[in-house]
Structure formats: C-alpha cells, structure tokens
Image 1 (cartoon, rainbow, N blue to C red):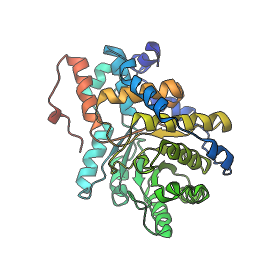
Image 2 (cartoon, one colour):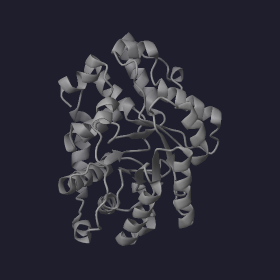
Image 3 (cartoon, rainbow, N blue to C red):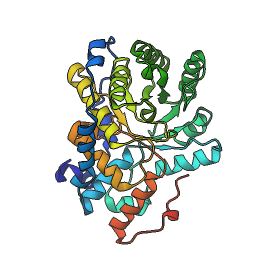
Length: 337
C-alpha cells in the first residue's frame, strides 16, 4: 500500500466496505478437481521461512500512515468469541464493540465515524443474539460449524449444523476440514467433503479452516488450500484458534501464494483469513503488508481478507488513541466483550 493509498480512508472518510459493496467479486463457483495441479504443488520450507523472516522489519509506517493501516485492519477483523461460557450478554457486548470498535471522539478525529469490524464470529447457539444485536448495521454474523474445532462429528450432523446456522441468520460459515483426509493424501475425499459443505451453505459464504498446525507439512498446506478452492471455498483460513500452533507468516505465505495461483488460472479471487495468535497492532500491519506484496491492494478489503481475533482490536485501539492524543492508555480501558 503506497502512502497515498493508505491515506485514502482518512482523507475521504470512506470505509473499505463501500467499494467492496459497489464492486462485488463474482463468487468462486469451484472447478473440477485437478489432481495434476494438486500434486505439482510444492513448498520450499527454507526459502519460505527466509522470506517470512524479512517481513516484520521491512514495513515501517508512522503517524497518519500507520493510523490508516490500523483503521483498515479494524475493518477486516472477525471479532470473535468462542468460549464454553459464552452468554447472550457477552455476545451483546461483543456486537456493541463491533459496531463501535474505537471511541467515537477518536474516530471523529480520524474522519472515520462509521468504522466497524468486518464481522462477528460466534457458535451456533449465539447466532440469534448476534443477528438481533447487529440488525441494520450491515455487519455480518459468522458461525463456526461442522463440529468445530475438531470436525469429528458424524458427517450428516456436520451438514445439518451448517444448514441450521444459515437458517438462523449466519451469512458466513467457518467450517473445519477433516485433517485426516489431508494426512493420508485423500484429496478426492477432501474435495467431496468441501463440495458438500459449500452446497449446504447455500447463499452464505464459506470459510474453510485448514487447521494448518495439524497438517504436518507446508506442502500439505499448499495442496489442501488448492483442493478447498477447487471445491468452491470463498475463503481459506489458517486455524480454529484452538490448535497449539495457529497463524504464522510461513503458513500464510504458502496459502496466499496458492490463492494467487488459483486466481491466475481461474480468474476467481478467494479470500484469506489468518486466525489465532494475532494480538498486536504491529502484527496486523505485517500481515496487511504481506497481503499487499503478494496479492495486491484488491485483497486489502473485508470481502477478501479477515483477521480471526478477539484481543487484537484492543491493542489497535490503544495505538489509535496514542496517535490522536499522544498518550498510551491502560489496556483495561479497552474491553472487548
């Protein structure tokens, strides 16, 4: 993102969602499984790790430019609560935060009074509460599904869970793939599973969670990414956030290069969502820089890029408050839910 581009939002007050809404991407319809393409996918770990290691130090943005990047990051956050003790009250607070992610006086100073997060992500039982809380805002509700996080419930129940979540009002469904299909190289099985999940989603967009920390190799990540896109995934996502290893820059590099390859060959843009472990504003800027360098500016919009996060927003809010006031506030002043 050039300095001119990064300033656009602050200069015009126009949110990234606006242009995405007026110029919607054609949805990825999927293509037949191409095993030759899948098996040619490779991942040079040492080269990938060297490239990823250079990223945090290569982009240094300050003052207004940093504020613009961080505002863009907020618009791409799937504000998430996925805890066993979730309650309607917690979800209501989360939705209130999604609607008002940063203190109003700070957003007014930045010229972004209508800034919101990209979505709110919850378990199925909380969909109704979230839909009611977000009514009229344009902020979609995303629901995790298919036996999240392990994906080991009976297949017919996973399909039914998707259908029930769509019926309840979820506009986006974050599904988990069967990792065992990847680990034993059953690419046809993974393709068929993803096709069924996509069909069950109907009009709702589907994000395929690869649980990359459990796939064994970067080559498996590359191949699973391609197969899910061939089967019609609207997004590919790194993690459930429940694995021991979640989003990393090397994994992200592999996945977004698979997205670039898919776009070059088919003309369809698929979104990307890193999730789990991204909690600092500086990390968000690094990921945005990676997306810009590898995929281009068009992917820096909430219809093609999301952060799966809960605590990230609090740190970004602190940085924006520092930008406006010159002072850092305590983290407890920026509760999420």
